[in-house]
Length: 302
Image (cartoon, one colour):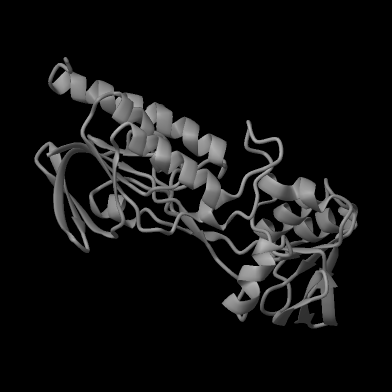
């Protein structure tokens, strides 16, 4: 039986694996290969990398570090998580495993604009024409022409956030007319943010810009931010009995413990700032809490 199974091999899961392996615990890391960090062309706000680092390169360095201390990483997809007394059964597409504790670090999946095909989406993302995190890379669009695809309170808040980097911000409704209450419209007007109705379609990279059709005709921007929300990958924990918010974010305490004893969570699957640094900090807290819980059950001695 493993001391801990980590589900998810993004920055949170890999940080926890490094900590737990260095605590001389028997751990297993399940990696489905879908970490959102792998999509980052180059992050410039990760401390220690003044010239930036690609998400896939950061993950590779973290994987090598975890492996150096004996963390076992398996490329499988977890399909089931269930309690078994004080322990857990983790079902995968390659069989079942038992563990004394489990750390869920499965993250989230961004909702992509409808009708934006992978043939355009992926190169646009790689070139910075399409971006999903204004906290991460708002600096990179300083004084550029930016569109936010979204509406309602969420779209308004993202547009206002980006207004701190550039005065040329346009909020485009994804499907039809904008759904904005008077307060949202007033806030956008006060900030000088243009509002355009949808639907959006016909996405294409045209020169150095990402262009698409709107109710006002075809428009092109230096960068486009979809503000369409995300899917929280918390199903496994919820099915095991863990409490979650209405949006699906797992509820944890100050030690990253869920409502299920022995089940921990860290990173974007927990409500908070969706940032690599934040996920890594939560993972360090979770890993230490896991170590201490196991020590309470049975002294850890060499």
